[in-house]
Image 1 (cartoon, rainbow, N blue to C red):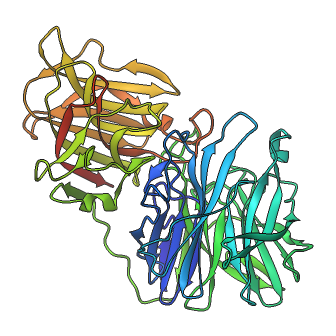
Image 2 (cartoon, rainbow, N blue to C red):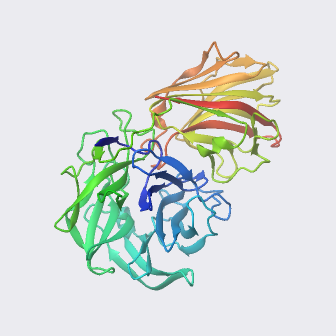
Image 3 (cartoon, helix red, strand yellow):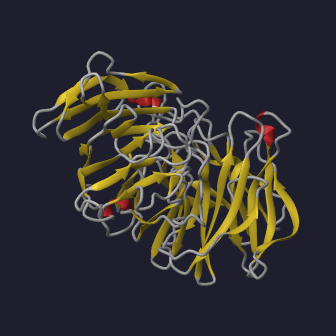
Length: 525
């Protein structure tokens, strides 16, 4: 027996859609405003997972210019039938404190998870969290939660809709059925249907995506209902639980190669007593057993297990504590993503100066259109990020450096710029704290005239920037700061992503200045 330690996908990897095709397990997760859209991990043993695709990788699939923070890709559904993969996804164009949400749902297909993926087929915009159920008779059924802007609070989550999808016509056809209005917990979303034996089982997420989150199960012998509630209402929740795996809910069921059933679900691990999850919402795995026609967690409770045991010969591959990204080619993009749109060679490339990543300056760090920025997930509570910057600004409107961010309103940025008074380059640290801008180095500017090394060290709740001119002697720059503002819980309004770290360049004058980065290194404990 081998123990799997949760979470299995660390760092920002929420809303898992879980399936087995042949000998391989796949989990697709939400990416929100990060491009390419949807992150697909693969494993042959449930133990070792690697990213094998980010399928929405063309502007035809996804153009998120102007999308708000935590908009974009919400809760994709990956399924397989008829010799090909089906990927359903939402592109959220508007959401927040107002009553409206603009949620456009699409379908793409591919014979291989690595692609190429088809052009998108538009389906509807009535709500988010879509999924596709392939029935035994070959018919396909589309589900999504319905958003009703007329009602405040949980009543805006008015229920789960079901409609047939005609593949020949590439559109939804026939009547729309509202098959489930949720339990008393409310906020019903994230629907998936599974046929097991004589019953259709409807899995939905409820209670919001934070500490009251849960997964609700209902069943019916008819696809369109009526659906009866699980004896416990919920399959899993962390509400009232004091363990490390919190926010358990929204997930997906899969029968494994060993005949056992497993449930992949989102979760969060708070970093402090304020219950802030800097790593964002992650993915954990639970074993499920069936009793009297209903699924239950194998641990006999409603609470997630920190570990599960599987009967397999595989062993976890050693976790590399340090990842060095040299910029000889585009291999770094296996871990890095950009904001909202792909960055073409005119903005980001490794060819203009071989061995370096060149970023051409674009809009500011609060832009929701074109930022010259490339980042990777924070996936450890303790980490160090480092890069070497070659940059020759001639204006205060030129900036480049090392950024640690949650969204446009919550970030820390160690950047090089130009000080006209001193006629030299200068290092500063800026912060955005729920939209409040502050310079953390007002009286301690660092002037320099050579290439410079930049470093960020994070230890749970605290972060500190450093610089060096020789990669040996490191000096603090700016004050120690609170990392926990980079979390869903702190963001205002509530967000859905996680902390990222990376490189960026801005030219707020005429978009001609560029910066060269020699390498990027991430060391995580």
